[in-house]
Every structure is written in structure tokens, then in C-alpha cells.
Length: 50
Image 1: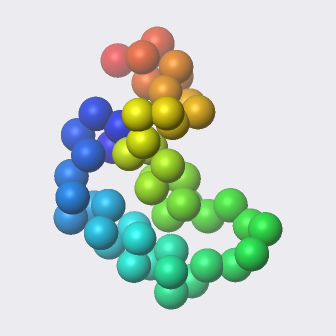
Image 2: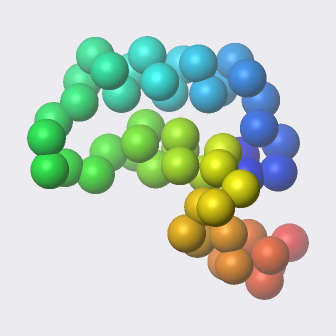
């Protein structure tokens, strides 16, 4: 997702995250949303294995 950044996937993840968000709990959707950011903390993994 970090490179492709499909808007449909982002919109879906945002909607799911809003509906099922649990405080203090990392969710799959929040991790997916984070991957869209240029400052994504795990981008070095992507760069290493692309």
C-alpha cells in the first residue's frame, strides 16, 4: 500500500477503523492507513524488500 496508495483501499480502511476502533489497540486498519503516509515508520522494510 505504501507505493500503490489506492484511494478506494484507504477509504475502506478509514471507514472500518472508525466503525471498529478500540482505544489503545493497534488494528490492522490503522496499520494500513499508516502505510499511506510518506513518514510511515516501517517504510525502510518496504524499501529493503522491494
